[in-house]
Image (tube, rainbow, N blue to C red; front, side):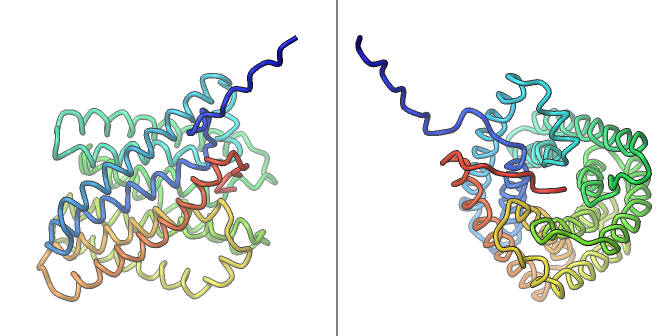
Length: 312
């Protein structure tokens, strides 16, 4: 009896873990930072657009593979949400895709952004529902709560100022409790990089504030909060990275890109040389971090090595 032929494995795996979605968010966010740099004459526009196209392409492949996984097993998405496995990174990346296609089609950008914002709202409601249903001793009050709210803070750029203040109020209410919980209990070394997500909400809020209220003091206040958060996190960098590379390092990517974007938002006010230099340094830092993390994570996916949840 002839042996059955061995089918070659596809070059791109047909299924993807949710842990790759925050990596894609970091890639697109970093690419958009370079578009901001190009708008200020600090980088070639063609290079920035090629970076954006490549980042969106990677996200499309990962999203297709993840949706295929969810289609084959519908229980995967609720399980990922309960496990805090990075699913909100996908909807936030989709919001960034809306920004990426804006120069090509305002209508397409609005459609993509609107769908992503609605999905993000659904995720936030699910997070709130899970928290309300959890027993008091269940540690649901974690850094994961900051991620979906951080994404929604960008939504007012498209959906209007009326949405900005309620979302900012929710973040202000949630963030201190999350920080206290994180600081008051032991944290496994592999989970410590998740603390870096605390940098994202004030950074994206500063971007939204500058878009809604150009030149206002609110942007400076939010950026100052982001800078203080970055300084506090940098002071604990050795503690955060003590375990060596882990999937949770995806949390270093998109918050750093968000801070770089906020820096460019301030650079756009006056074109001052200090802010232009600061924006370029932040963009280079975000690019280096994102490239290293993405290379490790995507290589592991390509070779079918397990990738655990980035946030717990």
